[in-house]
Amino acid sequence: MEPVERIINAVKHKRQDRLPIDYTATPEAHNALKKYLSIEDDEQLLDKLGVDIRRVAGRYVGPEGLIPAAGINTSPGTDIFGVVWKPKEHPSGVYNEIAYHPLADAKTVKEIREYNWPSVDWFDFSHLKDEIDRINRDRRYAIMFFAGGAFETPWYIRGLERFLLDLVECPEIAETISSCVTDFYLKRALRAIEESDGQITIIGSGGDIGTQRGMMLSPALWRRHIKPYSEKLIRTFKDMGFITFYHSCGSIVPVINDFIEMGLDILDPIQPKAKGMEPENLKREFGDKLVFHGGIDVQELLPFGTPEEVSRETARLMDILGSDGGYIVAPAHAIQGDTPPENIMALYDTANGG
Image: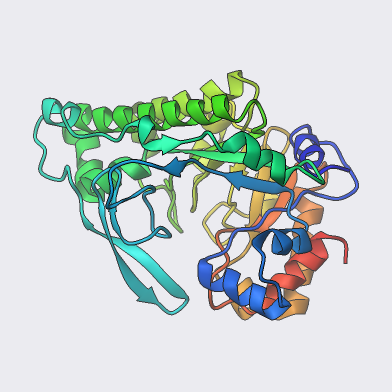
């Protein structure tokens, strides 16, 4: 069976030769795994793990000196939104932390609208068709493009505390930032779709709205001020016929039905240690309407368990979440640098039927 067929069948909740598989890891974990397996090529590693999804992105051609993506796993420096990121070492690797929020002191909607927002023309997608043709030369994979999100990037720009206060004290400022960010991400994804000649399968969006114990903001605030922009991204791509994917770490149970109503197909990453995100509960409540992506614990199991424990838990989750085919086997976040390669292989050997 072709990898893309596994993803399509999972969305249709059809049982098949095996459950589809995906992989994300920090650079430290990724490079350690390649060394452990004596593999130098990234594509060879993905084949070894049985990964059914391949990710593509635009090439940055905008102003010099800026980094093309915002986030903790990107290069340090100033990103295209003007957010400054500085590296900080943690026990499991290096993550970026925000050193400057460019709109932290903005007082009016006019200031927000007149800000130097990035242009879609700062990205080149002319290579996508040839890149996807190369990826699919021997087998047809599910090709994923990640559009962006309407919550995380806005607070990167404004500052988390200030942005959350805006939602209550000055919602027009928060909504204007979210609107500008969403419009950029939407236009960029549409450009990628156009240049890929219809070969993209999945359009992702996301932004963490959950913590270990609950949501970062009340469901009511999220529905009033953030949901419309997340829905604009998800619904646009759903109506175009793409499989839709949303990433949020943490506990987000109160709004999962909202995502289903928006047209979401795949929910990621199913953080099992977060309150209410136990796989059994999620499958019972939402399993006939969603595909779950992730679920293999990266907080305790993968870094500190034994290979046998990893294998048993992977098999258990495959039985629970994949009982009707609606599950993509993957870690519950990027695999961290302190994870033994033997445990990573226990996950993927089990997922592949080993």
